[in-house]
Image (cartoon, rainbow, N blue to C red):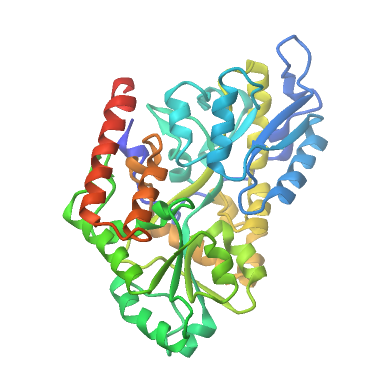
Length: 434
């Protein structure tokens, strides 16, 4: 594992503009560029497994129909789970003898285990075979899927958390029309929001079963802590415990609520602020009966992790099917289509030239909240190994955060147990394979 491939700050400013992939270059011809099912005949159909992140099934269907028209290859879109973890479980079961898809969505916390166990195929040679412009992707998003010099997915539904706030409630509390710049400033504002808006929670966060561990990743960085330093666990560092104590104190003071339905609670006007994925931007905007503001996550910066999912190809399908699957992935993530996907969902465009494309300019002008996500990329970094590379890391951390918030358990005790469990998993499941 190369550290440089996992931890760089995302930088878009000054990135070279790369010409868009032509549709024919991505999709091939009616014979799928010579690809076959392994018996000499052309590949006539593919199967893609997705959880349709960000309510993306309509746009996924539209893009797959366009691919079918361009390539002559039919694509069966399968709802393989309601979230990334359910898709990973279904894929893991298929590895034991079930029918494998040709393309599978793989999240930031699921891809590595499959790569480590040779369940998904390295893509670099396929990029050359299918003539994929891999350098045209946002570098740090592409490098999130690098392991030992090889890449195991291409970025697709990529996101960061955003700070969402109810402008009406902000105004009622006499606050400026912006997000808090630091967590100290949030601690000053939260009581004002509570006083001005009655029983409404100043902020609501999803619970540990719904990626609280992702949102807390950024918070813990701003306190100078971390989940890990590469493979060394750091849950018991003073700074990490301080961040956990802050979260617990905010919860006990009824300033941050932990909910199993955070989006609906915020959208219904039952919370003044929410930390949630950029992929929820479109849905929240359409559902809310008030004006939503967006801002960077509180700092001091950088305090925002990357997130979301990429598209991977199973290792145990034929080479011909792998090539056709690579053509499909390239098509779904080319400049034109990443713009369409971003505008339909709120996820970030994954190619450098898409951000400055003619199609994005009017959209950003009409949707300034979406611009916040792109600008926040400047202070965003890849996540700690303990969450995204350690098997079960996200769920383990999320459960611990539920224990110190909803459960009210002692922060040091819970984090010490988390340290021990995470270290054991690394030494048992990862270290022998590195």
